[in-house]
Length: 147
Ligand code: DQA
Image 1: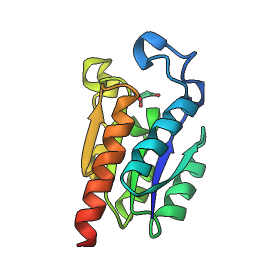
Image 2: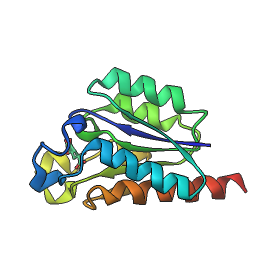
Image 3: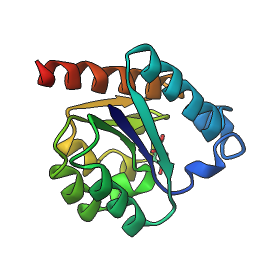
Image 4: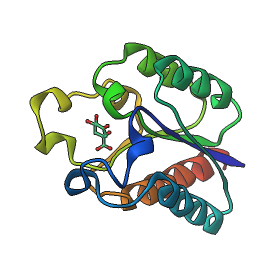
């Protein structure tokens, strides 16, 4: 069983992009953290990143029936995209939103997330570890749903 971990625009630059805000972990290191966390709980991970809104929506469609659940950092699209929100609304399994930074402590335009409206949980401001927390929570919810 697979947990999809989906990443939006600019997250490919993690490690070099604003390390004081986003930390020093690269996306490859975050992927490894997700794989290890999921493996420990008996799940596989389908880890993806795209800079394109439509590609992210296609990825959500691809996994929406097959994944046990979805962890998503839609990055800036969280604050702008009704279409990403609508795609997530038709995901079968649990959805957990993750942000490396604490979006509520930052600029006002980051305080609202369309993704949050369709998420079962949100992890924000816990850095790369937040991904492990989100994967763990999706695994927990998926296991609960299966029983
Ligand atoms: C982010 C927060 C967003 O506001 C920002 O646009 C990002 C990253 C985070 O992980 O903290 O690109 O989603």
